[in-house]
Picture 1 (cartoon, rainbow, N blue to C red):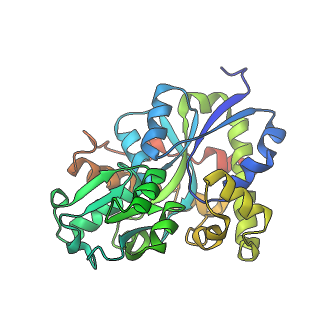
Picture 2: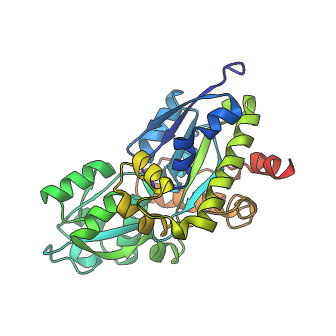
Length: 311
């Protein structure tokens, strides 16, 4: 395996600067690796593919990462892809009669199960004193949610862009992930790697985090000027299957930590492991995982970022 310069990278439809890296082919040129970019419909699908061995690196939200770690999957979180902040939201269809959390009783609410959106939906229901059993929560992937919304099959959804923009066009925001996160339940998207593969391909992972840091920095310094016509937005829209005109406003809802911030106590320096532990406790309460590990720090690594900063 160590001699094979090839990797399968699972990505989703989140609107992030990494998409510009996929489009440019920069990583393939700088590392000499053949990268198989495979799109998945949700984090649950990604962690299953990683468990089977068909994927080595994957994008997943903090909720599916917590589930993977709790199940004993040998993965390491090595990069915070984004702080979700307000980039996910609960949206109710116009005319559905839903004006608040308690109005969700008896309604059809779609979200991808075990995703960060699902986690936030369950947290919100608990905070507002609504029994999830009183809500018809449907397990749909984002593309399926967009289609169900267009058909009028669902009353509300907790999801991210590009499906979120579709819902907002015909509905109203009831709550955001950012608001729920401030109550002690923050969520993020991260990159995880198979630990055995990582041990044999350190140089690739160091090159990857360097490239990710550059892409994020370019967005932080220039992104405010990106429009639907700029190549960066076109690339993000292409790989995420989004409408370019929706991308600038949607990507602005995320936060992208710098290399130094990645290492801080907020993220890989402690905060991420704590968030995974808290998420796992909640998932166990909801019957989504069977056990909670005593410590989640072993599933988080800073070594590739530290080496990237050192040279």
